[in-house]
Structures are given as structure tokens and as C-alpha cells.
Image 1 (cartoon, rainbow, N blue to C red):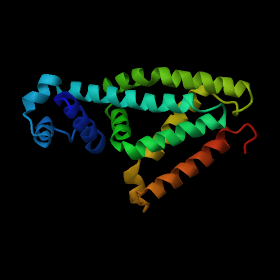
Image 2 (cartoon, rainbow, N blue to C red):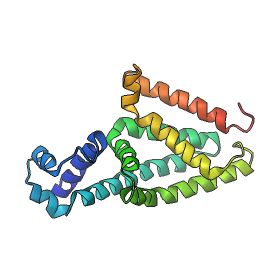
Image 3 (cartoon, rainbow, N blue to C red):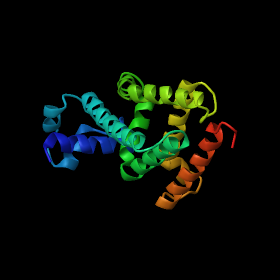
Length: 196
């Protein structure tokens, strides 16, 4: 693996697990067994390293969601496929979703960059929800607000590890599966045209 890839991978993990402010380039260099100048050669600043980490995380999230969309049908099947894909990603690569949550805390300019990266996906989801509402497969509501609400709910349920630990839920695959099941039941109830 190239040095730039190793740095990006370590930074993504650190930013996602410990936060931007608690991650230092000196610590990353020490962890990687390289000099800080080697990091700065590939990423001229900590801000640029964060931006590159966010770009990589968004690219991976989009790949996962595109696959879920491509392999699912319409209506509830697609919603379920997307939720399951996000949970699988949260289990496999928790640092990626942790990084995206950290970006919302940091705000602009990195949040603007993240939103710009994910906007095509959000716009596509909004258009798809509008079509599903018109076809009667999903309850009528504001599709833009619905997309943002679903995104926030799914990301929160998939990434709020500390909150779940604080209320006594151990972080296991079974715990994640139970959270996913309850979230899907909640979303189905909210989206079903008959209030199911």
C-alpha cells in the first residue's frame, strides 16, 4: 500500500473514532512509523487530509448505496435494502460513518464539501420518493424533508455507539441487527401509504 493510502486510511480511522480536534499529525506519523513531513508531502495540511478523508468516505458510501439501489426493486424493498446496506457498512467500516457524523459537528467548509459530494445521491433519492408517492407505494409527504429525516435517522441509529452503550446496550452484531430491525419497523410504519 502506498504511503498516501496508508496515511489516508489511518486519518479516516482517527477522525472517525476520535474526532478531528483530537487527531494530530504527529500522532498519525508515529502510528504509521513515518515522519510528519511525509504526511505533509502528500497532504499539505491537516485540513486537506480531512477533506481527502471525507471525499474517500463519501465515495465509499455512494458505492454501497448505488449497489443497494441497483439491486433492489421499488417501494419498501428499496428502502429496506438501503438501510441494511448502511448498517453493514457501519459494522464493517464504523470509522467511515463516524467521520461523516464528525463532519456535521465541524460545519463549513468541510460540511459544505461533504454535502456537495452527497447531494446527487440525495437529489436522486428525493426524485425517487416523489415517484413512489405518486405511484401510491409510499405515503405522501415532503420528499426533501423525508430524505433528510431518513438519512439522519439511519445514520444516527447506525453510528451512535456511545449513546447505545450509555443506555446499556452492548455493541454486538446482534445489537446492531436488533436496532436495524426496529428502525425498519419504524420506517415502514412511517412510509406505508396505509399507515401500516
